[in-house]
Image (cartoon, rainbow, N blue to C red; front, side, top):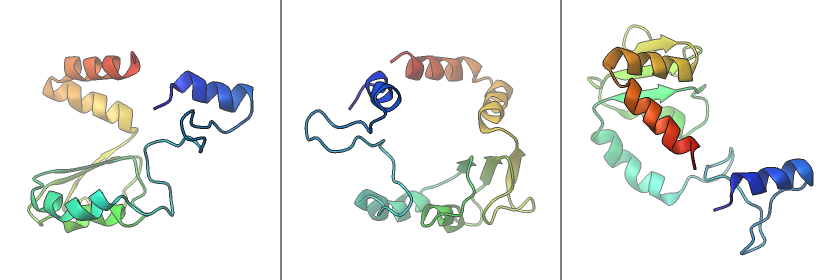
Length: 131
C-alpha cells in the first residue's frame, strides 16, 4: 500500500506514474479497470451473494459495463432495488424500483438524516479521511 501523498507527488511534481517500492511495477488502485478480467472471487461468489440479497442499492453509475451492470437484474423479483443516481440507468424503472435522483453524496446524506444515521455517517467519513 502506498501513501496518497507519495503517489500524488510522483504524478504531479515529477510527472511520472508512481512505481511500487517493492516490485518496481506501476502502482494502481484496488479496482478493476475497464477491459480487465474480474477477480476470480467475483465469479466464485456473485451467485451466492445475489441469492442472499434482500435489498439492492446502486449508486452513481451508467450500468453499462458488464458483468456488474447485470447484477441488479439477477436478484429475485420481490427484492427491492434502489438507484441513487443523476439519471435512470440500466433496467431500473420507476414502476418496479425506487429512484432517488441527484448527486450521490448529497442523496446519501439526506437519506441518513431521514433515518437518524447522521452521526454514524459523519464518524465513518471522519474515520476514512483521517488516515
